[in-house]
Image (tube, rainbow, N blue to C red; front, side):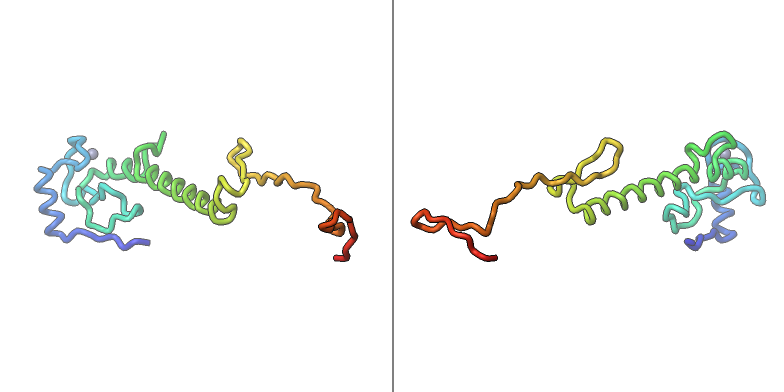
Length: 144
Ligand SMILES: [Zn+2]
């Protein structure tokens, strides 16, 4: 877990002054020094190691972090889930390249369902290596 940097009381006070006592999300709700949440515009969970950059109304902070009861769309949680999905896909892609070698030149094929299938290589039936033709045209059987 990333350690959250926190505001000093002075910084918090200065931030409160700078926002004129309104919520940092722009909703114009009034906040009070002891009735607000220090929020990160860019979520800590996504790598923000800096200090909070705004004081938010507790309700707005909750919506930002967890989304509304109806949807997490646009919330931090949504962004975090998305970041995880992308990361997972990136890992799967790099796996394809190492284990299945490169997609193109090792006869790996997409089966149309997003899975990779190996296509059997077409092989010649081969020929009888135990026979050899001499320079004079005579065919002889050799061992091995
Ligand atoms: Zn707000």
